[in-house]
Figure 1 (tube, one colour):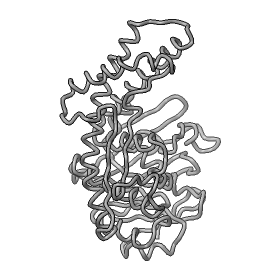
Figure 2: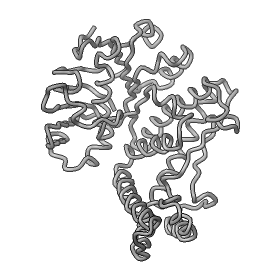
Figure 3: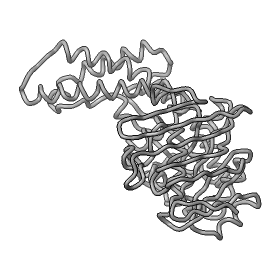
Figure 4: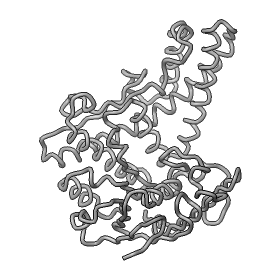
Length: 369
């Protein structure tokens, strides 16, 4: 999969512009706050359906503008396809090859990308929610139906929590309604758990190999997906659903007292270990960076394995955070993939590759070399 051309209008600080990308490495070069990350944000909108910065449409609209429009031409399985997204006021339009898409979920999974940003360097050290989000984003690009499952789970979770809070405060107690929410959560949690567990199994083998190679065999990475289903080996959805039913039933008194749902896939954790020791608690900064780098590289490999084509890699000013050895390992180990990289340091170009297309970015304008 390759991004070929991106056109932007009224997006962030970009009034109007078009970029064409190298099939190998494109380096967006410029000072801070010039618009480099805005380009990656626009590309990632097509992959995920929303901003990786968590921005609303009005926040991505150029100052004093009424809306934005983005169009992407990309190559997928040796054929050209196009995507279009615009947001003007409350009107949001999405198109694929000129055909209107009614839902955001219909956009996700067409153009696939792996984003590596400075925030990801905190993925190992951060809260469990960061690691769950990493899994959810990666899985949704491979299996767009996962988005719908997760959204339904979140909606039922919010409603169940509201009911538990009302019970805690003594406002009401609707045993039947609580049972309905528990059943819905059990069914959805079982499906989401199976997706996450299967994906983690694929991810851990590839990430393990990458860390071993990166450290010349001195370090060993392992991933452990921890949940309320620990101990269940089989992939029987009904058995897992029944276990969730039991978990909610046995802990109902505790959840009423807490006024919230204390169990379920929203509490799961992805444990990251180096040499059997928690990378979060005991890993050095270099080890933690190696672990995140391995996870991002492995994410792209798993995506390629499932979808039969590697995604585009978007690196937002992270090469300067990695030493020369890790930079070279990253790019040499992913030959044949497309990289779109941002940075402020022109000196890093010589370390990347001899085949780099440079686009200079200044005040939302682009100039190619």
